[in-house]
Image (tube, rainbow, N blue to C red; front, side, top):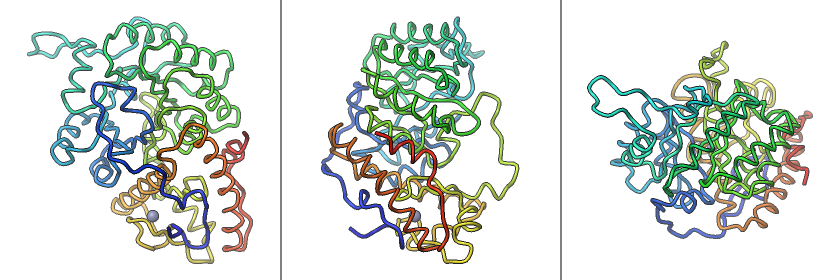
Length: 384
Ligand SMILES: [Zn+2]
C-alpha cells in the first residue's frame, strides 16, 4: 500500500485491517450493532459523509435539528447505510432530577403528548438503527440527576436503546466524580454513549486524558466514546466498544447549551485537517503559516485531496467541505487499520501507532528543517 502523505509515514497506517467481510445492519440489537463500528458524527455534511464510508465497518450519526428529516432522505439515497439519529437534547436541554430526559410537550393539534417510548419509536421509524435516550446536559457533580437518568434508562425494556450520558467536562477533573461515572455505566442495562461538554476540547489536560482513558478500562459495560477526537482511538484501545468522531470540531465535543457561536476570526474557519500519521488535527492556517511557511505543504493522496498539499484550504464553504471530507477519509483509513482486531491486538496496535506518530514528527522536522513539538495528548497516549 502506498503512503498517504509525502515526506512522512506512520507504518501502523499502511495496512488494511484483517477482515473486510460484509456485515449486516444488526437492527433491534444495540450491543451487536455498535460493536467495533466507527461512527461519523455529522450535521449539514451528512450527505457527503454518507457516500464515503464503509457501511460494513462504519456508520453515521445524524445530528442537529433536522436529524429526522435528513435520516429519512438518507434512507432513500443510501439504503444500505447504518445510521443513528442523535437526540437534539444533547446540545439543547439541561437535565434535571425531575426530568433528565427531554420529553417535549404536546403540540397544538397532537392528540397524545410524546412519551419517552414514543420518542424512541420515532427515531427507529425514521431509520435510526438504535434509539438514543434524549438525555440532557448534566452539570459537574449533579449526581442526583445522573442517578435519575440511569433509573429512567433502566426502566426502558427494549434492546434497541443506547443510554446517552452527556456530562460537563468537569466530571473528569475529580476522581470521586469519575468513579460515579464508571458506577453508572456499569449499572446501566443498555450500552452507554459517553459524551463530554465544553466550549473547547473537554479532555485537553493530562489529568482529564488519563481520567477519560481509565473510565474505559474500568467499565464492564459496553461504552461508546462519543463525540470525541483521536482520544476515541485511545478509548477503543482501552476497552470502548466503539467510537463516534466528527469531521468538524463542533462534532468532536458537546457545546454547552446556549454557548454555541462562530469563530471570532473568520480565517479560523479554514478546516482543521486530520493528519492521521501525526496523530492530530492541524489547522490549515497554522500549517500554512508555521509548518510550511517556506516549503510546499506535504501532499495527501486521499480521494478529497488527490495529491494536493494538505495546507491548501481556506475558510470558503467549498474549501471547508473538502477539508472535512479529507477528515472522513482519514478517520476511515485509521479505522480500517484496526478492523477485525481483538481487544489485545487493538491495544498493541494503538501503542505501535503512537510510536509511529512519535517517529513521524522528526520526519516532518527534517522536511521543514525546524523543530516541532509533539502534542501533549500524544505524550499521554504513549503512556501504557
Ligand atoms: Zn486528504
